[in-house]
Image 1: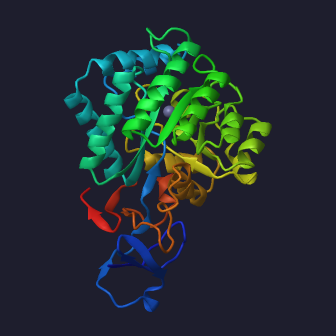
Image 2 (image 1 turned 120 degrees about the vertical axis):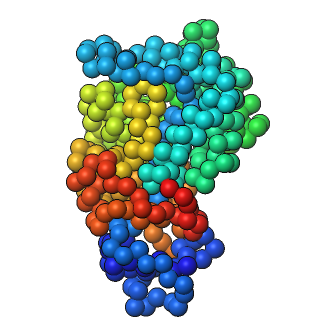
Image 3 (image 1 turned 180 degrees about the horizontal axis):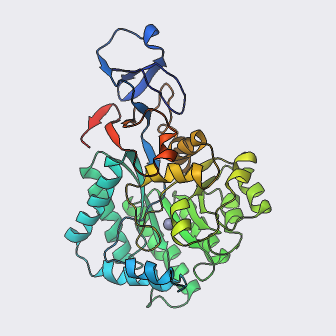
Length: 384
Ligand SMILES: [Zn+2]
């Protein structure tokens, strides 16, 4: 299949353009005049980009916490109590209900142009519940064309029955991670490393156990307090440290001088009226930056919001539109250690989206209202 267009192929900026797909991968990119003879699919003036990569979501939950959001915006504080409220509602939901909720959320992402979604567990917080939630992600992923990366987030909060933070962290490391690894239920382990959640010693213990079990590591780091979790992630070789709202110059340098991706989550920062991560400093220091939705139960609920997130990356965080689009595609792929997706190069998977826009600047201009017209995953067109 040869895709052609008179619009823009972003973030390359090529226009007009032609792209040859062979065996699900990009086989050639160039000018239509130089294109090999092949059956052509003309996309006219549409903006075409790689499929978006949302490298941070929490889709397995039941219940509704919009009342809590309203209360917080009236001055109430964000605590682990909110997560535990979702845990209670999610434990009470049977498999069929949870599967439908997860499927609806991943479909919302897909129909908004996200072709790869990272999905965390973390609203179960017991061995049986966490395994159940990971299996549900796996079953939904098998039914949908969207690519899914699964992350075990048993260390999201300490459950009511979990004892002390250190005792529960030991349970996560000693009992839960071996079970997750044995069943092959996740690619990554994540820890909510923040004040009032998991301290650096507990995070390091869980992180080292995960990596010894062959799982990748990602951290919620330096969101509410400057704990040094970002440096710990960089030192342990985490794939990504996420949030970073409180990161200072030393933290920026530590992340930039590592292979760990800095994943920025502007949407919950707005809903929480939090400060914004030092985006320009991270980019200027040479860090690999990703942006993701952090769609979850309590601090931002927008599954399918990646077009908005790209706009926020530019309008709010101070990236150029091209930097923001790159962070939402190849940046997200790097955060998931998937060099085979997320960019426009020969040999990369043909995950592509044609948008109802003519220029990538539309993501900023039309904040949240740019829609896909057609999309392909591994060269196969998907129903939107
Ligand atoms: Zn999160």
